[in-house]
Image (cartoon, rainbow, N blue to C red; front, side):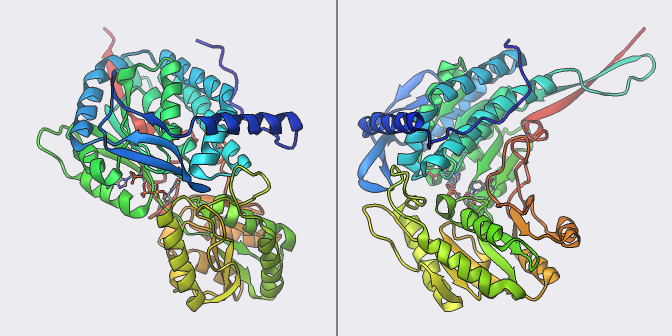
Amino acid sequence: MDNVMEFRNEPYTDFSVPANRQAMEQALRQVHSEFGREYQLRIASDWMGTGDLLQSLNPSNIREAVGVHHKATADLARRAVECAWSYFPQWSRTPAQQRAQMLLDAARILRRRKMEFDAWMVYEAGKSWIEAEADVSEAIDFCEYYAREMLRLAGPQNVIQLAGEQDELVYIPLGVGVVIPPWNFPLAILVGMTVAALVAGNTVVLKPSSETPTIAAKFAEVLLEAGFPEGSFTLLTGSGSAVGDVLVEHPKTRFVAFTGSRDVGLRINELAARAQPGQLWIKRVIAEMGGKDAIIVDANCDLDKAVEGVLVSAFGYQGQKCSACSRAIVDDKIYEPFLDKLAARAKQIKVGPSDDPANYMGPVISAGAQKTILAYIEAGKQEGRLVAGGGPAQGDGYFLPPTIIADVDSKARIFQEEIFGPVLAVTRARDFQHAIDLANDSEYGLTGAVFSNDPEHLRLAKEQFHVGNLYFNRKCTGAMVGAHPFGGFNMSGTDSKAGGPDYLLLFLQAKSIARKLS
Ligand code: NAP
C-alpha cells in the first residue's frame, strides 16, 4: 500500500498560463476527434450492445453527437443486480487496504487524464473550462478522501472494554448498491457515490444519467485500469424511467445512492421502502435532491462583493447546480443600488459555446431544459419585473442569457420552485429577520449564503438559516471536499454530507463483537 499523506484538495489548472491553455486546446481537439464513437454496456465481463441507441449531443452544437450508447433493458437491469450479488462475497472480503489502494490508483489515473476529462465535460455537459476543471478536481478529491476514510474505518474503533471481555466494533459492507447520479456534476457526483460504495466493499450497479453517458464510460475505463475487478461494478447505461424501478425494487438491492431531482428521489424512497418477496433487509436510501438556494444581502455589507457573490452563484454553469443561488433576498435600504449593479454585471456576461473560454456561460443541458426554463421566465415576467435577459440567446445550442426578475413575492412560483437554469428572483426584505424568514420560506434547505458585516446578524443566521451548507461573505456554490461536507435539509435530501467524515458510514454497517476472556 502507498505511503498515504494527509489529504489535500486537488489544485486547479491555471488556464491563464499559455502552456496550460495550449494543452487544453489540444485535449479539446483530441476529444472532438473521438466524437460519435459507440459505447457498449458491460455487466461483469460481458460487453454487449442492445441496438437501442442513445445519442449524447453536444449542447453547444446539437448537430454533433459526443457519443452513442446502447441502452439497457429491464432484463439486463435484473441481470446486473444478480451479477453484482454473486460477486459481493469475493469483493467484500478483499482487504480494505487493497480496495483503498485501487482508489488511490484511480485518483492518479484521473490526474494523468485530467484535461481529457475536462474536455469531455466541456463538450458533453456544456461546462466552461474552469467549471469542468473544478468538477474533475472534485472527483479526484473524492477518490483521495474516501480512500483515507476507508483506512480509518477499517482500523480499530474506540469502544469501551468491559472487564473480562475483549470488545470490538468492525465496519462491514452492506451488499449490492444501485448508484444513480445526475448530469450536472457528471464526473464528481458519479465518482463520489460510486467509489464510496466500492471502497466500502459493496458491489455496484451504476446507472449514469442519459445526458452524460460518455463521461461515465470514460470513468469506467479508469476504474478497470486502477484494478477494480469487472465483477465489482457494472455500467448500465439506459433510461432511468425504463430501468430505474427494476433496479430499486430488486430484492437483492441492498441500498440506493441517488442524486437528482426531488420527484425522482421521492419515488425511489417510496419504492425502496416496500419489501419485495425474498428480500431480507430494509433498503437504505441515500438521496440528495433539489435546491432553491438563497443569498441574503444585508444593509451592512460590502456591496460589490455581494454583487459578485450572487452573480457567480446564480449564473456559474448556467445556474445548473443544486447549490446555485436562485433567490437574492436584499435589504430594502440597499435594494435599488444592489439591483442596478447586479443587472449591469449580468449584461456583461458572454454566452456561447463552452469550448471557447471567452464565454462565461455555455448552453443549458437539453432542449427539454431550455423549454422548461423559458416557461419559468415567462411566468416570472408576470410575477415580477424583468431587469436582465428574458428570452433565448442565439446559436446552434441550447443558449439562454442570464435572467434577473426583481420584486418577486415569496409566494411566486419562481421564488418557490427549482428552475435549474440561469434565472434569479430578487426579493425585498424589510430587515434582517424578515430576510431570514424569506430565505427559510421553502421546502428545500440545501445551501445559503449571507453577505453582512454585522456579527449579530451572522449569529442569527447561524442559528436560524435552515440549510445544510451555509456560507458567510462568499458564494453559495463550490463546496470543497473535506472542508464543506455537502448535503441538504428537508426536501433537499437525506443530508448525507458527501466529502465529510460521516459519509462512508452510509455505505457500511457496524458489527459489535464481544469475546469472553477466560
Ligand atoms: P433527475 O431527472 O432526477 O435524474 C437523476 C438520475 O435519475 C438520472 O440518472 C436519471 O436517469 C435517473 N432517473 C430518472 N428517472 C428515474 C426513475 N424513475 N428511477 C430511477 N432513476 C431515475 O435529475 P437531473 O436532471 O439529472 O439532475 C438535476 C437535479 O439534481 C436537480 O434537481 C438538482 O438540484 C439535483 N442535484 C442535487 C444535488 C445534491 O447534492 N443535492 C447535486 C446535483 C444535482 P435518466 O437520465 O436516464 O433519466
